[in-house]
Structure formats: structure tokens, C-alpha cells
Length: 127
Image (cartoon, rainbow, N blue to C red; front, side):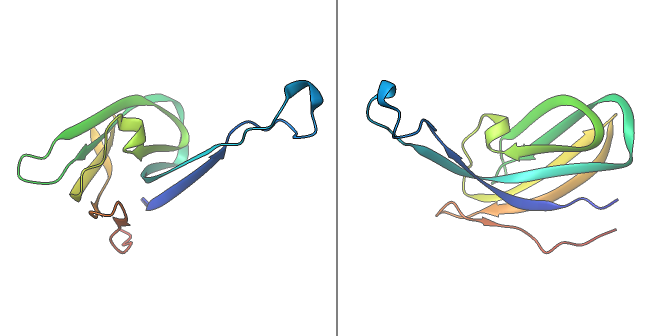
């Protein structure tokens, strides 16, 4: 099974009101951006009924904190974004992750968050 792990960068724009709109006054624009590691598990063929999926990330160090989310997986792909979906702040260091569907690990990997917030991902290798 091919399980990609890649960096996902999101950029969202705020208020989209036209600056020419006289009824709204002066236009204010804002934005937000965040980097996250996107953990993906895929099924082929797609699963016909929802199944529980549990994704865990273990943080750096010998006593690394385990962060876990549990959701329903249906269709052909499930993705979680670390640290956003896990309601955590990402600590610098080496992390490992797994995604289990129906009590079996179907995806796993590692990544490193550097002190400057950038992410190192291992080269892809396929089973």
C-alpha cells in the first residue's frame, strides 16, 4: 500500500468584501498561514462503510508526548494534519507516527521538526 507523507502549507485570506462596497466602509484584509505535516492513509478499493481510524504522533525525546486523534474513515483516503488536528504545539525534534484502521497499523513514518519550525521528511520508500 502506498502511503505518502508530505508537507502541506495552507494560506487563507480573511474578509473578501470588495473595497468598492460603500455600505461596508473601509476594507480590512488579513491572512493566516501554518505549516503542518499531513499524515495520509489510503484504501484501494475505497472502504464502503465508515471505520474507526486512530492516528498517533509521538514527540521527541525518550519521554515523548503521544498525541492521538480518533475519527471515522470512509471512502478512499483519510488525512490528519499535525499539529493542527491534534490540538498541539509542535516541539522541535524527531517524531514518529502511526495510523490504525480497525486495530491494524496501515500507515507509519517519521519526521523531524527543526528549531526554526521547518520540517525534514524522509525520502519516500514504497512497499
